[in-house]
Length: 339
Image 1 (cartoon, rainbow, N blue to C red):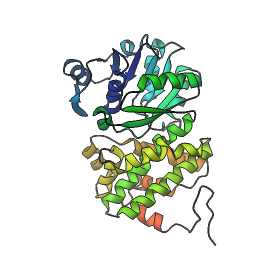
Image 2 (cartoon, one colour):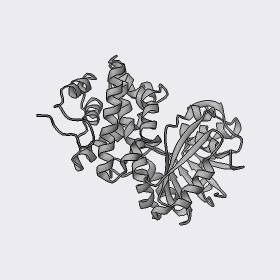
Image 3 (cartoon, rainbow, N blue to C red):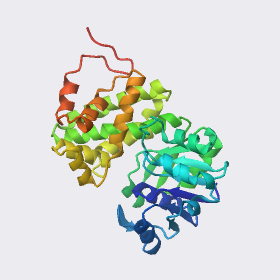
Image 4 (spheres, helix red, strand yellow):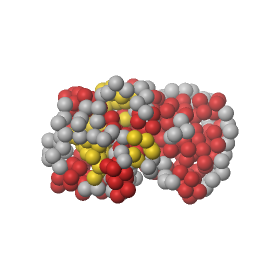
């Protein structure tokens, strides 16, 4: 198991993940750029911005990236997908080439359409075997309350995946191993778009039948894109795929679901942004996903519909009209148009 670890990114999930690590480490460094987050964590062991609950006293928070990452054997990155590249550039000189870097973020970079581990490899010049991703149905509040939770650790090296799994495994947090890094990351990023669609549907009071249809058809959409990009279909049926999809679509604690719900109730993009005090990851991912769909020639009507509502000023009812007026097809990854 790694001797020293740190989490870069002190939002809700990053802070909770640091708390997970304290089960196996006497000290866990946590970096965040916000002064009040660091001060509250060190003095009161709470995170007032997101989760006003007690965290372990083993967490040592800092505003210094150098202090956080220097001398660590494993770093867990949990920053916004659109800001990860900048953070990596700032820590590059403090990280050794034998450090293992793990992505906790769920998104796709807009400027490159790359996943988080791809960006880590590119910026830090690390071999793929030293980079991994952790993703699954992991609501931060429930994990902080130590409710039973499972996740997926994906990496190219069995030994590295084993070490990460040992570092994060607790009585309440259970990791499962995977070698499909791309699939796990795409699951974590793309399901957020489907959660936005579910939120819109609930905001319009479409009912449970519509939710089931959007979730199942949405899973097929993101799986079709993932397989076209080289991911394994079975990954989308597991914890990182359908497991995370269910949690993100059905929980009121999901930022993506909540953002979509506000859109469905008639709020505009900026109004929904203010109500949520930020933008859900699925919004930016919808842009990247639509570009990838065009690149790989994969039909993604739900993703396209969400994109229209988010960025083209379409009515929340646009999604229903689009989906219910699609041509008739058979079901499945290799679906065919009915004559």
